[in-house]
Length: 251
Image 1 (cartoon, rainbow, N blue to C red):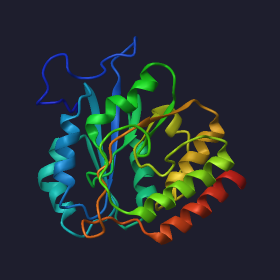
Image 2 (image 1 turned 90 degrees about the vertical axis):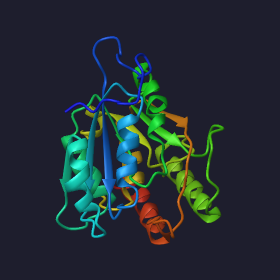
Image 3 (image 1 turned 45 degrees about the vertical axis):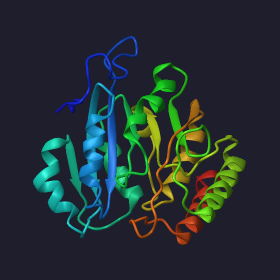
Image 4 (image 1 turned 180 degrees about the vertical axis):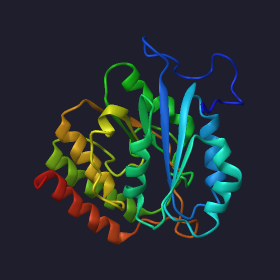
């Protein structure tokens, strides 16, 4: 199934070709207990200004009604829905989604509305220009709108990014960004081991070891609060630190 943009006008979808063929974007949406936002994010992804896209949702054993929405309302609107039979974590959801992706490029789209699907063309451009194989969306560069939320989360992200950069020898500004885009052949070469939020430093370490060209582009960010459903916490920060050491020094 090809998910087209029902609200676009001719000539506004981006981009249709890389000079050889139509470029297909696979969007992997990991979700866990996102009943308040899952329909909205799917609608926004379907309207995103990309001509050919494949939408893959991985439900990580939600127990808040998300599964009912997926089965009754959302499954007909997307290409694939994968249901985990036990909660495993974001890394496990990405592992499942990446394995079935068929697009030329693959992007991670969280279900919580923090990242904007309208910015897919911005992430895709370095790859379509032949400059990059992997693109990170950075919340800390550019002049786009950012919701003001948690100071210590920002500090933690910057510290983890610095530590990761020291071991990968990359100069990223936002290693922990969830908005990452890959050529499919690159991401399907990577065996994801982390089940939870340690997947971000793991992916960074493993793409760095592949020595492929990596770009970073500024993105907008609409962070949510814990009251609104934010799940990542301080324990995940320690796991990220462990993952930085593990996948840079011992893999």
